[in-house]
Each structure stands twice: as structure tokens, then as C-alpha cells.
Amino acid sequence: MKRLALSVLVVTALATTAVYVALKPASDTSPASPSTDEPTALVARGEYLARAGNCLACHTAPGGTPGAGGRAMDTPFGTLYTSNLTSDAKTGLGQWSADDFWNALHDGRGRDGRLLYPAFPYTNYTRVTRADADALFAWLQTLPAVDQPNRTHALRFPYDTQAALLAWRTLYFKPGVFQPDAGKPAEWNRGAYLVQGLGHCSACHAPRNALGASTDPDALAGGLMPGQNWYAPSLASPHEASVADWPQAEVVALLRDGVTPHATAAGPMAEVVFGSTQHLSAADLDAMAVYLKALPQTRPVKSDFAGVQDELRRERGAQLYADQCADCHGERGEGRPGVWPALAGNRAVSMDPPANAIRTVLGGGYAPATRGNPRPYGMPPFAASLSDDDIAMVVSHIRGSWGNSASPVSSVDVQRLRGNLR
Image (cartoon, rainbow, N blue to C red; front, side, top):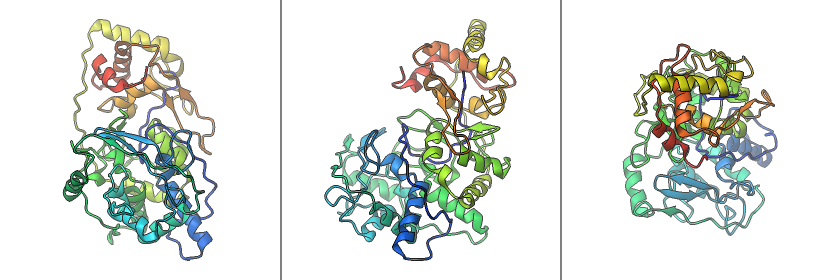
């Protein structure tokens, strides 16, 4: 489609729709933990870590005050609302101690001892060191107080009970700070700490069971994001979003700029690059790239998306592509380097499931604005101008042309991924 920007690599996010929060430049972007307890340095370090964890993206409601919470997080079990992180004594963290905050990150418990829902990814944050948790807390205490009471979650029974949470934690959660692997170099360990912990990459890039738990999160084997209908591709599959054979500089560029000659970040990943990874230090980006490139490679798993294309539908798909897409992406799907991505040989187009290709055609594709790519090209949405059947035919055409050999999709596939995009 015109100006199609499909994500080949998706690295960190629990985000849904974009919440763009501007933080002042961090005064300390070194990858090491703070070497001093001097308050200014500790706060600056905490601000950097908050950016690495993309904390304000979730804890800011659309149009709301940064950090004041209230953002709705739709899940298969109901809707949760993020909490107020500002220094307000009544509704925020103003009466919390550093120990209280540590217990929330490390053990998933609130100040009153209540169990927290794992939509707050303490299953990842438990790996954060105490020093980094204290720095984060020090920065959060500087957020201007906002009197905004936390909203009550709207979950179905029995998911709204502490007993259900206790059972879930017994099955799927074990607290534990990140332990470096003595057999790996320091750079790999730093990357693992960021990806597994603060970056909480597995919150999106790990498949989940019926109870919302992942039994092997560090494999980063990919998964469909509930409520969003985006697919966070496997970072360990060469058929999806593995970067094992990429030059390290390109992995860094995608995390920092949101675009490389071979890939563009779109959808939820664009939000992550915009609000988080573009602000990380060169050393931390290198470390993440080292870790991601070293992930053990896996084989693809076949999804249940599959349509049927007869000759008439193939002809209709080709005509739709010529009318709607070829001006930007080329008659042969060749794209235009640095402007519009090629569709021929594009893993984001041919990966299975085809959720991202369908969602991009429906809702448009927009790369993040970054220092390295300040004026990105975007693709308009077609949800209102093309029917589900039209979108199925043109996506099927793209997935089966110019050397691409992925299975076609059906109008039912499009319908179930469309959601509220009309």
C-alpha cells in the first residue's frame, strides 16, 4: 500500500495506542549503575532508566498529565487502568518508601501488600537491581504531584480476585534479580539485563497461554498482542524478525532511528522507539544489539491464518495493488530505498501470521519521528475505503508475488483483525 511501513523488528512494548511524552534530556546516560548517592545524579539516572522502561507510555492517559495514570489497558480478562506515579501523597506515590517501590517491582505487591496484576510487568521488573529501583523511585518522586485517584479495574470474575492472582503467581511467577552469566561478555549481560528486565520485551514478544502467562519468555518466540491485533514477531526466527545475520550497526539504527535500509518500525514498535529506545546511550543500544543477535534461532510455527485465492481473486488483488499501492511500492514491489520499503522479499509481509500486514493496510503505517529520521514517510489507512474482501485480496497478492510465497489471507482474517478500525 502507499508508503507502507511494516515492522520487521519489534523489541519492547506493552503499549497500545501511542502516548508521546517528552522528557528533558537525561543528564546521565552511562550504562552502569550510579556510582554515587548524590541526589541529583541519582535522579538523573532514574530518569534515564524510566526512559529505558518506557514507564510513562503506560502511566499516562491520552491527553493526561505525564505519570498520573488512568490509561485503559484492555486484556482478554477485562480492562485495567494504570496507576498514578506522581508524588501526590493521596493518590500517587507521595507516601511510598523506596522499600515499597522495590516490593512493587521485585515482588509485584502494592504498598498495602495487595498483589498487583501482571499487566504491570513485574514478571520482568523483578530482575531490576535494587540500585536501579532506588534511582527510578528517586526520579518518580520529582514528578509534580497530581491529585488523580486511581480508577477501579473492570475485570470479570474470578480474575478480579486476590485468590485468582495468588494462584496465577504460584504457577507462573518467581521473584529473582538478574544474575549475570559468567560465561558471557559484559556487553551481552548488559543487553540481557535491559531486554529481559526494564525493556520487558517478552511482554509482547512471547506467546501466552489461556491465562496470559508465558512459560518461556526469554525465548522471545513472538505472539499476537491481545486487544491490539498486532503480531510481535519472533526475535529468534530467521523467517520473522531475527537479526542474527544483520550487521550490528543496523540493529542499533533500528532501535535508535526506527528505520534502516531493510526495515522500518511501525505499529507498537514505533511507539517504543519514539518514547524509549531512541533515547538510550550508544553503549546500551550496542549491548541490546549484541544480546538480540545472539538469541538461539528457532523454526517458524504455522498459524491458522489461511485463505483461498482463485484466478478471479488473484486478478482483483493485482488490480487493487496497481491502483492503490504501485505508485509508492513499485510495480514489482521494489519500493524506493530510504523512502518507501520494498515488499518483495520483505519478511514483515510474508511472516505467518499476517497480522501486521493486514493491520498496516487497515490502519496505516507510521514510522516514529527520531533524530536520525526526523521527517518519516507514512502510509495512509485503508480501513474506510476498502472492504475486508478487498484488503484480503491485495494482501494476498503482496504475500504471493515477486518471489514472496506466503499463504493467502481471507476476508474473515481481515475482519477479526480489524477491531474498531472503520
